[in-house]
Amino acid sequence: MSQGPGLRLEIDGAVANVTLARPERRNAMTPAVWHGLADIGSNLPPEVRIVVLRGEGPSFCAGIDLNLLAGASDEAVASPADPGFDQQVAGYQAGYLWLRDPSIVSIAAVQGHAIGAGFQLALACDLRILAEDAKLCMKEPALGLVPDLTGTKPLVDLVGLARAIELCLTARTVTAAEALLLRLAELVVPAAELNGAIDDLVSALLSVDPAAARATKALLQQAPANTLADQAAAERRSQAELLRSKLANRPALRR
Ligand code: ACO
Image (cartoon, rainbow, N blue to C red):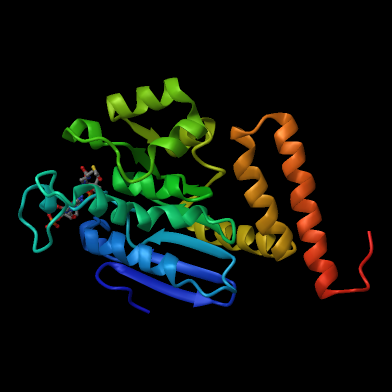
């Protein structure tokens, strides 16, 4: 199913496959793509538990369509001269933020380049599986921009502040092998095995109880900001809520 220019959505039961589909432009992104991603997030059927993001062709995503920055595109990108700038960029960010919703697990399947807005899309996902030829680059500062598509927080959370500063302020490229060391990838596989590795991961993720998966992801997401005592209390509350809802549905269950 097409989701507008450069984007395809296929839903197969509990799995939504989202594909950046403009390979002739290395899946360069425009506001229409960001809005299309946000629409997918807002309209995801409740039975979807896994979202897999892929890029068609040799690159996962070459970042923002540079024609937008050059003023050579049919589409316009938010301008700071516009009083609605903040709201417009928030609309672009909405295309990324839904990927952290506790009701799903999002996986980026990355081959080739993931640059700028494309690297941030991979960072927006819960998990990243990389092909051996993957190359990640936060290019924005080299172009006189800051990364503003929600990537700075997950980057710092994953690699730490010092490494995030080094990566962004040099705009250097990280290979798949280094990405694994920096915890930017859960797994690196030969390119020909990328789809198989994703299938295996999806099967494993679907094998656990859906309600427990949702509640556990929500708990894990709170953990970094909580004290140990607060997190322990959150675990108790979450367990009680989960078991209560199971008891309501299955009166025979006792603990
Ligand atoms: N915007 C618009 N067009 C692009 C982009 C882009 N970001 N990236 C690639 N293309 C186009 C190329 O211009 C080329 O078009 P052509 O066939 O008409 O010449 C086509 O896609 C294929 O690109 P190649 O460069 O030939 O492909 P290759 O596989 O050799 O290189 C790579 C891929 C490394 C991604 C390279 O295209 C590149 O460096 N692109 C620019 C990356 C970039 O700076 N993005 C902005 C990051 S900042 C941000 O996202 C906010």
